[in-house]
Length: 408
Image (cartoon, rainbow, N blue to C red; front, side, top):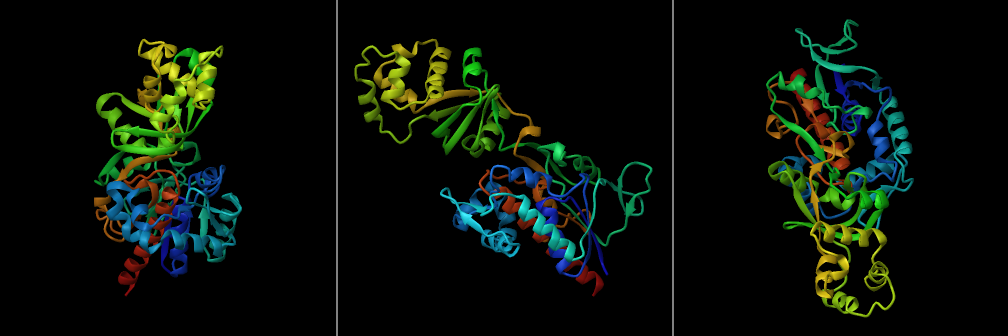
């Protein structure tokens, strides 16, 4: 029986293993961690967002310039396919109000346990605490620890080692040097779906760290996002921020900073806001007046004060017209990107031009790659997992086609 090694026990690697095992290959999944799916389990802590229900054309647009290269893989293992796959494992899904798709259990652990049982029944073998170090002169896979003599011969290999976010869960990007030394083009790994640094005043940071901004709209140039954000001690993060993180990251790389605008009450007409803010505040403090007149939270009022102080103004001295404009366009100067180790995902990786249509690395015949180690990125909302599952399945199918040709 043909032997295939899968390096990496995350969603992409496990899906490749499933496809390969069902295709008749003898599969060994190797991972440096003591168990499978560690980052997958972390992703499910707040409710496992498997995929999204929006129509495929809009869905694919989330992958930006990588969309044409991912299209066939995602069409072959679509959001509907992923939902059916989950249900077959005993974990039916539902569509949330945002269009995101979740298992009804709302957790990753039951799905992962069922998946591992099925892989075990299909004959997939696991080798944990095995850090891949490359190949020896004979083309055998080499694993750490040094001097252990741990080498593996494989008829084909699927690399699914992830990017470089949350390295303590196993994906530290160490593979980049191994492949670059083989002449494979690698785009630098960068934070994606990450927070950003802001030079908050001490009083704002102390009072509002950990406070959410809810129901906001963000804008950066032509780019828009709705959702929530969270004030951190050193900046800002959250779903709405992540949706713009690629554009913000590139602007900061080019210019050293980026100015994000926050609409605190995006659903209130400008004229209506001016009317409310023109009313007499009586004996109320100005902060209380703003909270009542515009239904602003304390952190939202604090953000307005932060902006006006930064501009050398007093918030209470701003006209009703000016306040209405400011409330729906609060400028926040982003000075840097939060570290990649804390990012939800990473951009960069193996250039998609290095792969053939079966996700084989052209310069390394018989070596396939899938998941987040490829050079694509997407916002949160189910797009990250969908592409990881889909490219893993595509790489598995590619291996089966290659081995059929080889053996035939």
